[in-house]
Image (cartoon, rainbow, N blue to C red; front, side):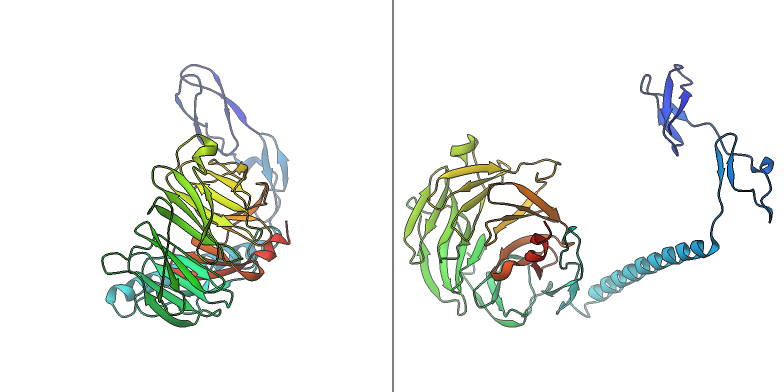
Length: 395
């Protein structure tokens, strides 16, 4: 219960919460130190062995007995926690010294990461397996920024500055790699992979097409007004969806043959009335389009034929609001997933917030493959997989 004390400066009554040693007066802003209320236990009844007897006594003094066995268990838990912390700190120190000495280069091969299956309460049940890590050799990444997967389970990881695209099988085993662009034009803006294994890459605001397994160029896709591509994703039917910006924010879609079949001009600004300079796009199994406008801080949903349906999400600290989204992806049930400041949020097709959980890794880019398996690229430059159906079954 809060205690009331008098401010020594103005005499106002100030409430002091239990356990607080000091506070400030809300009227004159003076600092107030709680009076010393340390009880004198010498006057309490003797409970034997020199200790006071249990009970509640005048002045609000409460004396309880403690089970020695319980106390021992508590100490052991504390000791175990301290041991785990020391082990983690020691491991970090060894890693730092080893890396500094140049002996190894932080190779991560099938390392256990802090991820896992999700139960209905939004907690992780067991660790996930990941692969990758920082480095320049095969299977390692240097500023990896984009991830994609084809129908065969091949995982494609693209590096932002080098133009290197690495390919792994479904178990995370390195298969091959290739490099796109020219030495002076290899900045990877966005990447998507179709179920057939075609890779779509945005670099220099142009949208290029490659054979995913060989890296052979298959040409380009064009907006009627030229360069300006921003983000790209693919649909289950082989379609290609991209956001585009050059003095206005458009969403453009191409069919599996590369022909434009949809153009939504001013997709976000036309609905919000506010300009938009950076748009991420996703498409679900029915072809519905989701667009996250970074400057508008919301998600806009359109039907497969381009009709605006709803706007949802916003920036804030209430449930269903965003802090700082890094990427979005849609599953085959029509739900939209958002990686937001270390948590995964999920909304249904109407924009209803269904819940969120902490995968214990920060996911910078992600794609959802068959069976609602999420493939995520973490800030540690590792690839992790999360079975989203485990979470959806619990909500």
